[in-house]
Image (cartoon, rainbow, N blue to C red; front, side):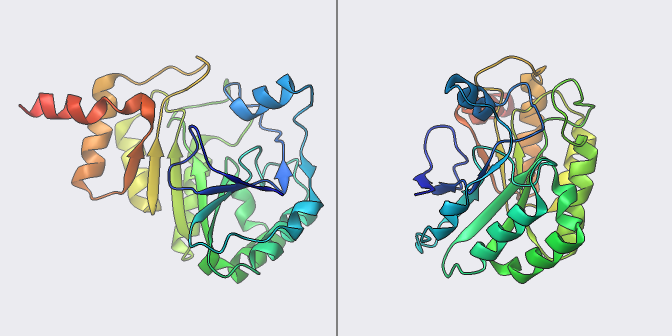
Amino acid sequence: MGFNKAKGRMFKSVAWTWNPCAGCTHACKYCWAESLTRRWGKDFAPVFREKYLQDKFPNDGSWIFVGSMGDLFCEGMETEWILKVLKKIETAENNTFLLQTKNPLRFSEPHISYALEDIKDKIVLGTTLESTWDTSDLTKAPAPYERAYSLMNSKRDGYKTFLSLEPLADFDLKFLTSWIRRIKPEAIEIGLENYTSFTKKPSPSLICDLVEWLDKNDHTYILKENLDWVPQAIQEAIQ
């Protein structure tokens, strides 16, 4: 069965993970999924697990993260595979599917965009923004501004959206808050790099400024465990 209970440091918004496709071509230096896969003695090339299309959905009202062990929309995933996964989602009755990718540019490809439109009420389109700066030293994925603008287009087209700011590296607060304002995500998750140290971490004060802005503008967000100190730091600064 392709479904697993979400656990550990997985997005807290998500109850289940489902991996009908796995692997990725982005080669993110900090990717825990690739590191784990290689420890198992396997490569991280994209693969389609068609047998998982026979899985029965939990039908429990929860969010299901599609592709926790890869990126369904990376360039290495064949369009045919993506369309088969989206067609399976169309059969769901009572679940919401998080389609999280570092390449949301593929959402606008003709065949994929048509398939997404057919399941608009069942999905949330998400992307990861580690920074507002150039990330070519960390990943082969599209630049953060390209990801952000693609998700803005998805919001404009009526889709629900999601942002993962993890692993959060140094960023420009003005740029990032401008992007968030235009993406209008249903939820945001924020965390620092967990298992490696490739990113330049933002200063504590910059992180607090971001969280204060989110609070002021009524954005729904969740702080991962490595940022659980932030609320107290903000409170102490106020006092």
